[in-house]
Length: 484
Ligand SMILES: Cc1cc2nc3c(=O)[nH]c(=O)nc-3n(C[C@H](O)[C@H](O)[C@H](O)COP(=O)(O)OP(=O)(O)OC[C@H]3O[C@@H](n4cnc5c(N)ncnc54)[C@H](O)[C@@H]3O)c2cc1C
Image (cartoon, rainbow, N blue to C red; front, side):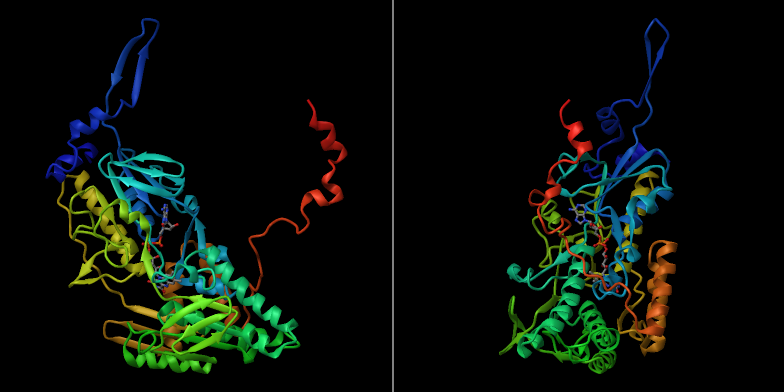
């Protein structure tokens, strides 16, 4: 491998030449010989610096692929604003108390610990300067020779950002535990509420968006209220809970075959979920949702309707698409900066004129492809265009039903659910997590239990401020230590 010859291969005057990069960087090792101070400078090529922003499916796969194909001649730095990688497909289970946060996440450092040339930095990327080849983060400015941008997507409220506070979306562990808090607190408050109308409002849950996330959330809420919580409360009947799933299009799971989406709709209705299709949400506040001509009073509203790519893309181009994605070439890089790759949910990669879907397999395959193209540069080989291998889609409803569509295979029901379980266990990072999730699924399948029914809040201090408590006076030991 010849790391510093990368620039020569990339050509078109965009990548720096080997000489230019080496000249820019200080020598790595300086030897001095005895008292005479004769300096011998062993000039060896500086390592190629690959900076990866985001340790989601795309960024992590890129880091592992690159690290596996390189040695100390390539320095890989992974920056993420969280210290953990998150398996988003199972977030809805944390939000509905089926799994705990640590079951579906893992420290990024642990995942990458065995790769000696990878370092991990906690920090949020704020701005990319493609001319200077550096990224400004909250924990420092980082130079790069190659940059991989994989910061994913967040929610879009279609210009109604004020709705977010009343209708959280599901993208992070913090959001999942907040949703869990709201859902479980609504049942607790309903148990104590004497007024019938207020009780009804507390026991009404609205999910906006009938894609896979909305369907999975609504199904899990139906199951939680009808099967898990029925034994826990004395004054309310949780099975009288209303779960309303609102979808703007004509049917839920519109990316699936119509027969599968009808089967999913029937299963949701059996779990007590009411479907409102072809219905647009026009207002959300603390009392509920206006949908079509009706205002539904609901204490808990959840948002699963739209996504928007990370705003970091604005540093890269002025021509983002409507969902904030960065258009990339067939090699997954920017047309005018071939050393900058954008992958995963943040990239707009077109397949026959249609953007690739925001799915984990797309992100994983793009992570691998971007890394291989950097390796190709380093080895003076030609880059390969990205080809997506579509493995199909799946969504689950409740504890024993799923729909699976893969090429010519279409399945709905228990066997599809087993396939769903298998695939999700397989992709989950970490052996411990796989075992934990597997045993909890078996347990909840047999017993209908949801063991993570914890109400936690961001408030960590005891309710009395320390100053008002007698213990605010320093204890004897502490008092002794105050003055030097
Ligand atoms: C609730 C939910 C359910 C889903 N279910 C499925 C499913 O069943 N099947 C499926 O295939 N796909 C599913 N998806 C989609 C899938 O999770 C995404 O397509 C995939 O995560 C995209 O990977 P990514 O690496 O592009 O982004 P992400 O996985 O989102 O990773 C982005 C990373 O970048 C970090 N980051 C963001 N901004 C910054 C910044 N400025 N600086 C530093 N770090 C930053 C984040 O912390 C994160 O670690 C689901 C998504 C959600 C939200």
